[in-house]
Length: 131
Length: 174
Image 1 (cartoon, rainbow over the protein chains, first blue to last red):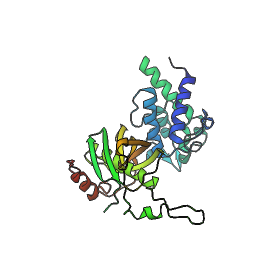
Image 2 (tube, chains in turn yellow, orange):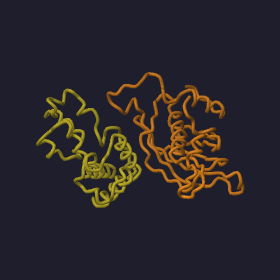
Image 3 (spheres, rainbow over the protein chains, first blue to last red):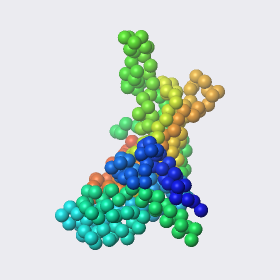
Image 4 (cartoon, one colour):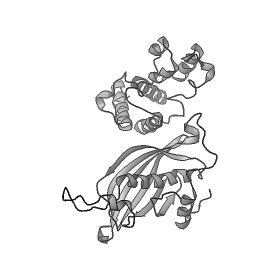
């Protein structure tokens, strides 16, 4: 059984490698985009490297869902609607939406992609694999 | 014609690996400036292949490998240089050998790892010597940039690539 600390350490290694950041920048609350400088191709790189590090497959959109913030049904006046947030939550049970819900600007949607969300995702995948 | 930075494909295993070579030549004009003599610092001219172009050579090697895996239907664009480490210069009269391997590929893109080796014709006994690693990521741009439209024709894999593959004896229909 892999402990959360062990998962975090491996996730940290992946992010240091993929984003060329220092180890101490990778804190649980760090946001992949605004704090660690991740750009779109980096998300694919992170998915590939997580698969390699943990030995499981990640389906497209499983870790970083697409087409929610871009869906006009889910965005009104520059904000993600409650339906949009519900859709995101369903696709991302590994993320914490508390902060985003206070001010759900569509431009801030990237802030739900934290290091913690990645660690949660990996833990859930590992648990599902051993269940 | 696209500026080609590989001369010949030696081996191609679909979706797995591609090996290509580049013969560095003094006839390449950029070598005359890279690096020219620096009289002020007392340095003689040092013509060597710029590392950026070695990276481009690996990008073309790996790009063809990734494109070939899907019969050149995808527009494969270099998106990220994950790592580029080169320990030695490549000089005119030497041959670079690029070996690119696909690490992972899906509909959005691919990651490749690459080994760069150098053959010095003045020291044939040494064979190809490992001089570095170049790891890259490619995006299949039609699938990976939501909402951005690209021309219908595959502008990545042009006639130059086709000619290279044909003259290397690789059958490719695109």
